Image (cartoon, rainbow, N blue to C red):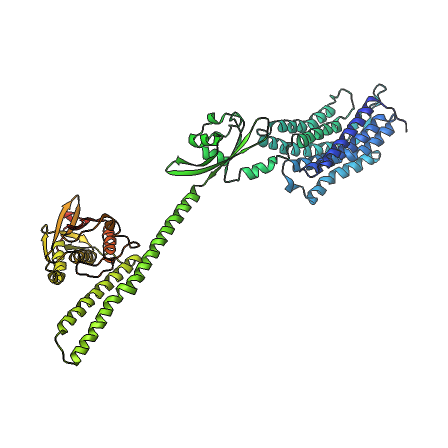
Length: 590
């Protein structure tokens, strides 16, 4: 078999060397995603151009036909390797399975066998032109097997590869412009070469430059992968990761132009236009300028609050420098609104728990000490009564009986307040408003407490509006009146005076209990209605108490959507007042 070295032989020798060199470079970086597939592609095209080199050097039709059959090893496998590489390169790895690879190679294997056995059926080549004496190139006349098994199939693979490539470029080129341009050109090379060959537009008739175009594509891919680091930047993973992060991601250059931004970042900043890559951040249509200014500020930002719709959002902004000629920086915006709300809720819950613990401690203190005291008194004086009766000494029986009666009444009052307060705290105190006459209730409560007032020679008078019909919980209001009048008696000196008055103002009924007793300091008033700080103060005749009554009064009045308040001055007395809603037109006769 005779050979003649031509410029085309040298050309394909050079392309073979380039192909294997690129394959070597790719294999050296096989840890980079897509490098192994690129190695296979370059080896396949290198084999193709290696046999093409012999075909261009052969000087006989038989020799050229032989080497053309052999070169189909690379010609049929390279398009498959090209598609596999593109699938890996663009992140479609799920399609690269052993089964799919086997299916992809079925038609190439059949086409290769047809090329090797072409003399028996002429399905690949139906004939050949004379060899050009000037170029040593021979034209091939192709059969149906070539058009279906080689061209149609390879074009189909090339079409899918191109679709995936251009989709990749569309999604990534705005971020990686240089790399995107290289990928775009690399994807076009096989198409251009194939069109030239099939239409006979080559500068040398019969010269197939398709394998050379694949080598050019592979070289451009290698440049994009290894020297512009397109895969090191993980562009495919970027879409999956960055777009699904719950953080706003913003990349800026040293002139505050937006280089990249994810969907969450657009939402946080209130940017509706998505085509803002390359625009100055200030000109991107930001709705929340305070947040943007905090992001653009090169100084650290701890927290920033932004008014958004009907709520206040809280953000943390982290900033990271990116080493690049453009002086880029990465801004990460965290929405911590829910975390802040959770922290506030936890804080409130802790405060509530502290109050509950204080209330529990107070409750147990009352049971352990205050409730024990009257029962000890009852038990002690009842024992004395028994002894006096046994020895028939009746001199102090009446005195002891009075003490037992007073202690018993105090124990009953204390138990009643404890029960009502406990029901109120557990939410089991039912609110049952009814229509009733307030003046009548005030007189009833005053009559019940008249004996206690007489024991200290205290005069109880009233200044009441007539016919005050209210709609309220009668038992609760009665408890409030009883506690306020009892307190007034307790802290009023002998021969003192208590005045109960009413007035109506702004749809509210105000009831006041005014005494001329010992009075209180401002600090004492502030602690009156707080159980965690409340402690009982003995009365003017050393009367005992728990401090629970006023707290119960406050809760009962709050259930009526009313208020309770105190005015007092040391040595001049105190005025306890409470209000409940009052509307004259609600009067009814019952």
